[in-house]
Length: 152
Image (cartoon, rainbow, N blue to C red; front, side, top):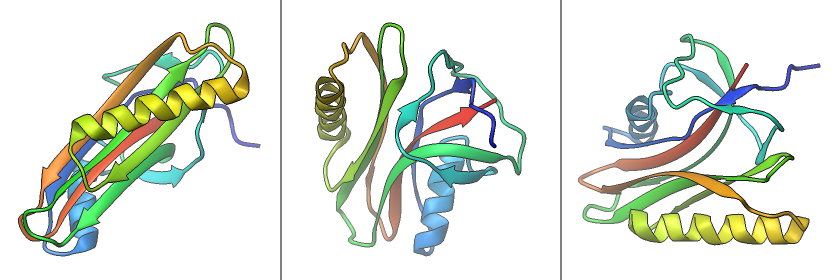
């Protein structure tokens, strides 16, 4: 059985690359998670987890991460990605991810609405949020990414 993460942070980055994978990798680097092995997870924040905005995770670590991203090769297109964490008073939290052909304000608004709905659906009170977002105007091949890495 895997241990339950005890720490997290929210991050976002955007970048260009010579191909789709390098654009994604460069956005990961901008978001401080490019030297990690991300394991994509769904969107529940464990109870009692601690927010650590300056957390440094050792390179090569296997890191459970909720993330959203978008890659575009349409010059001039505006793309954005956002993540949000919603907190309850005394239980688990919820993480939501968004990416689309829009600006960061629209992406953040989508996250706010998604968190509200997730808490309403669960019959829980939303008592706080943390949101990270990035937008990118594509030059040749661009990526916008936002993530919530979870750590031990």
